[in-house]
Image (cartoon, rainbow, N blue to C red; front, top):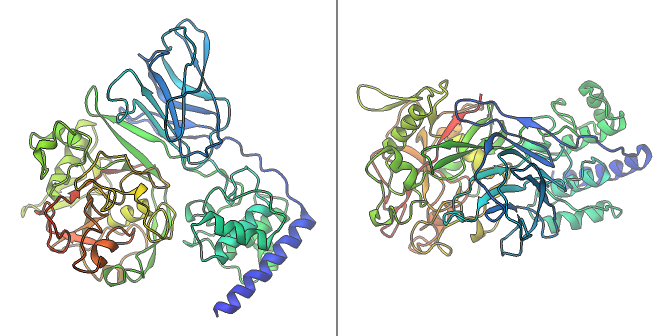
Length: 548
């Protein structure tokens, strides 16, 4: 069967090239992909194009000395400038700074001093690439290194099937998609590129984005496969018409084994531009949330086995917002006078470290407090026995379901870790990278959705009751876990993960995998004997809320 599949893919690749040479490829005119998000209470409207960010609210009290724009998640050769307006109505240009930063920093490089006019929009001279993160800092403030004043993150500029991110869906993209499939959906760009050149020696671009179900699953069946590539090729051959039925008809002529129907068309601007919503907790403290688009993914892990199988497709039918970071000690202390930490001496000296000894009810109570503070309806109530009840129809804050957590963690990836198949300490505060305790949130690399610390630092409480066999009976759409149970699900890993050698590194090594399932009593603050073999902290949380 495997041999036949490879032969089929090879022949399909040859067909693809022949057809494209005959039919040619035209440019896809989809340059901006402007997306807006609803305004509610203090939540700003956010919109963006490749050259403009509109934050939907005004910002002031920045000047030519202090204002810095940091652009990360871009290639080393990416360059742009930004235009700002002075309070006198004169345009000024911010260009590359000389100070070190992993990315590109823009600042004003001349000697004149002026006040930046109140603004809500930034303009850039060159298009921002997909995945770029833009942060505006006030360099005059001592806390600027850890507390951005304005924060915007992107995942959605490219068009569907445009994996080289040049706004053109053509032979190059489809050859790369086939190469990705033939290399067992590798996350290694160099391996994909090598196979691409074997399929199509004339390929003139390089892969910029690993294919994902969020962007490239045209039949919405939870996997990007040869059927999706066939639909893309058929779309080009029928003149890029917005006719799913015509595309399907041609795709079956090209590739009779194609399955499903055409739900999305290539070349469409991705519908969700991930903007970061800022929820003020005080005059100086905000909570940031990232919009996670709806989609389908493969939940579970055959590499882990046990309670993580069977691997099964799950659809998250509605977009939702998730905390960019784990809730910090400073944020929690805005709500309650007691800091749930094993190390109380860390607060207020280290306010940006995550809450590290939170019980399940601590997390529930914080969500209710946050809903009250922002004028939203509480999701959580307690029954007569003191057990939490969640109303998922409410618009307030809650904990993520286990499915929402894993979907957000994977962010379109299939690999063991959300960054690839091998451990990379640049993405996680775990054993080997952490200094034997928690660290400030957001100081490791984020995942594709712009979420930080989805592996390492502290484990995250989820809403679901725990059942080791739940995956065998789980609904395929928006599962919320068993109706009752003894333990609640805990996901992610902590700063201590991977440290133990008593079990050969098996348990604690698996914890870092995106599909690993943990659990504990709702009254526990961590430190289960099989969870941490050394005294330490484990349990924190991040909040979510419905996007609609």
